[in-house]
Length: 501
Image (cartoon, rainbow, N blue to C red; front, side):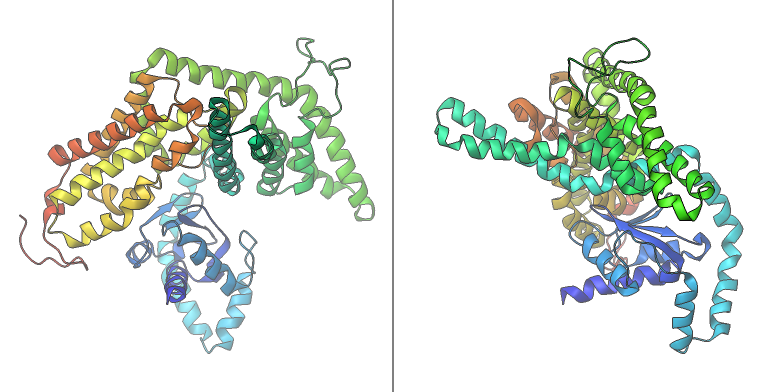
């Protein structure tokens, strides 16, 4: 049954990460189970990658096991269900699991033996951990954790906004009557429920990530909306005397302000007596950080966010096709190193200020290049049934914009196809950049799934870019990107059945 598949995967992952006792927390995104590991020396990376159903493993601040869309949420649910916690909740103390092992008949000697054997890798793992835990990686990890829970909301609200735009255009053209007005307005209200109050959601998530009280983070986000402030009685920027505008500084300012809030709140919890802590700490925290946010963070973050948006626009306007090529070419390497996470707040700031993000359609070309490269491999490596079966399973979701199965299961392990796929992404990016004025009204989807979210009816230009990336990735891979090892005839289990063709 289907349930057995997800339970099997859950157990297999636990078996190769040192058991649930070695996991501190578990969340998931669209394709990956993300595990916060207590002791990395206990993780069997080779065994993890060899699990049937695991498409790849990425080791950053969290251990990310790629199992694909539609599967990841079910596997993650089975894993937290077995432990008895909620998704994203802290796992119980390891001593709890030790008691369970003893009760099930597993001797203390066996557990100690496993620990001793695993410690042989401790020095190497500790060194790797030091490399990963750089300040930049911690910042990128925090940004990712803040926005991952909001991705489904961006997708849903964006698609609803797209439907509203289509219906509005049809009404103007006379294809539908004015009796649709109320329904169209309802769709717009639903979309506004996200973007009008996005700073509040970001404030709550930021507080959770930084270890502060979630409600306090939400209030700081709301403070930037300047609710109740009127043009007749504005709050003035202390640096230039101009009136502050609602939302100035955007989500970049909110994230920074909530980080400072987390430091202040934690310090107050240490110095305020327990008897009055629940009254004094939130009051002082909100007062200090609220004033700090309005008079310091909003003016400075406003300049930064405006500069980022303006800078991206300038690069795309001046560089055109060249800028698009460079962005499309290097986006997948950025994803591999986790650097793409810094782009999320930039996308959102551009949507808030411009009504669209022109970056996303260009970056989406990187995944399209992977699709073209995989089709070329399918044609050139027909006798390698293990590879072609993997491509057949990963290609549909790759076309829909979920590229991890193709990247980690097909092109990256082979080496050269990954490079030629990136070239295809660069070609698609050059087409989008050259055409110009193609943007997305929401973030989250990519590939074909992004078409309904292209702004101002410029979806045809985006489709031309997609087809160009498909063709570029296909041709570059077909002629230059197929390694001899990929053409070796194999059965579906990877056993060689004849010599290379």
